[in-house]
Image 1 (cartoon, helix red, strand yellow):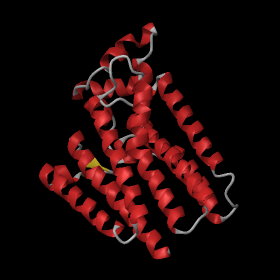
Image 2 (tube, helix red, strand yellow):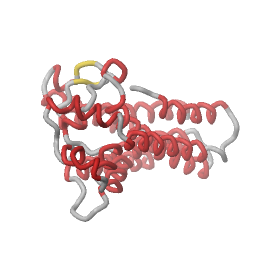
Image 3 (tube, one colour):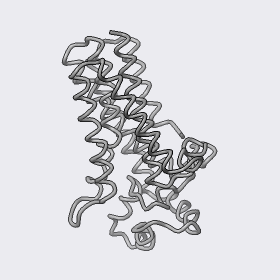
Length: 260
């Protein structure tokens, strides 16, 4: 079974990298973790085809893991794509924009981390209760990881994160921080709120970043992230007190402390 667990881990990693290649094409990203993205180094066509190739390799590995594993990956991929579609379309008029965003994060990021946790438990022969517990944990810590990216995009510089600060602002991508300001009715937020309604031109990003770093919304986002991490850690309480559980608890701490 250990070989199956390793194969499933490879499937999740190949899927993850493939989605990053495609995501960078859609975002026209120049950097990925501090180095040139595949699309900027080669081309959009090469990046897309490479992502497709990785998906095919993941499918090949899955074929040896059985129908349950294949179905789980299929449902995960469905959520990944739905999340990307929902992000591209944006919230409908009258919908809660923050609720819509959190669902996008759950589908685009939480789903794959939940699946990786589920694969590990399922293929190692864990009890059904433990499989379900780890799946819920994976979803929650996956959401927390993505929300940490929201904070990093504003609070860290490129040397720390490997990502150009304000990338989401430039692309007009809503985040946990900016959505709080957009929904604000405070007079002092009026100017910033207007700026955040659409993609920012390059020359305004530095100034807006300064304002966001001083804004209450950033502190609230960090607090929300911290609480989410605590909730994920609490989900682990029913599990046996073994090194694997301690490692997952440490992951909860690492998510909120990371700068990249």
